[in-house]
Image 1 (tube, rainbow, N blue to C red):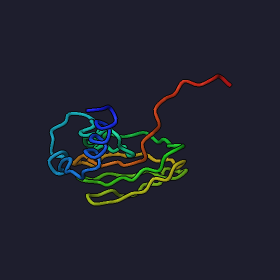
Image 2 (image 1 turned 180 degrees about the vertical axis):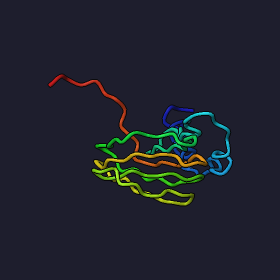
Image 3 (image 1 turned 90 degrees about the vertical axis):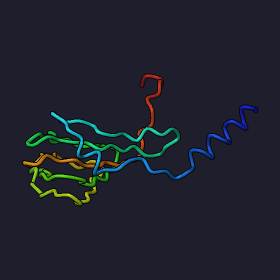
Length: 133
């Protein structure tokens, strides 16, 4: 089989829809600290996605993502989203769907039951070596 034929076969395989996991099972995974429970790792993808678990009271400090919009779906637990210049609190519960536009400032704090959420965003291009300015 030629290299071109192998590539066509790989491209066809990559284009097949498939079940990747179950967020209920992932979020039930015991964790003693903040953890990434799952990452989208399929080759040829255009998206990045993670399931993140924060244990009760854990906090992701305020930060801004300058380049990417991020979609967040709370899959288990509860917590608080801090958003805007004053880090205004907004309740997060299972099923909450958030859009975090690029450039926005946000923080996340897990509630008493912890918090698990799925993030999805455009895949970052890989680092490239270029000429110095």
